Length: 165
Image 1: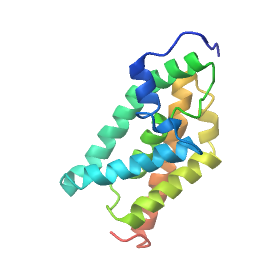
Image 2 (image 1 turned 60 degrees about the vertical axis):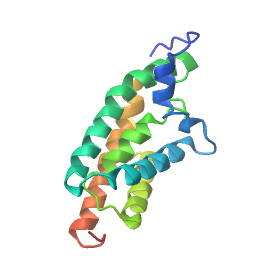
Image 3 (image 1 turned 30 degrees about the vertical axis):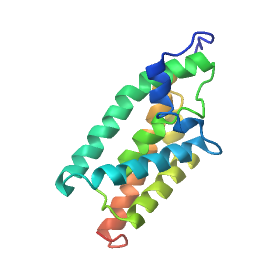
Image 4 (image 1 turned 180 degrees about the vertical axis):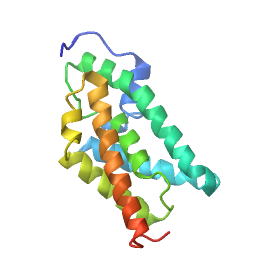
């Protein structure tokens, strides 16, 4: 992959890729991005009908992916890095996926956070292999896969009654 270091990323790309600057927090910018997403999802979802929550999470995750891939590409190029830690729009997308059709309780939100971060950090197959995709696609899509793993885990726990509805 060729990295085009030197040119500055546009402001929209920086704001999007860092999720309004959350990615600049230390330590563990990815965890901060996920935590901010869980908090904002909790606040937002309390204001909408429970029947609209699954579709809203899907729509927001899709938006994060659609904007995140080009933003991450431009910011990574400008930084001269393959996957800059401060790019956290990928965590936003993956974390939202992990919360699709999940009850709005502190236990389910916390478990969704833990499962997503666990899969994002350990990167079980094929998550690790997806990082090899070019530029922003590789930055974002591996977190989408980690989010899908977490979503499956959450729904299994719901199905077997280990997570309250």
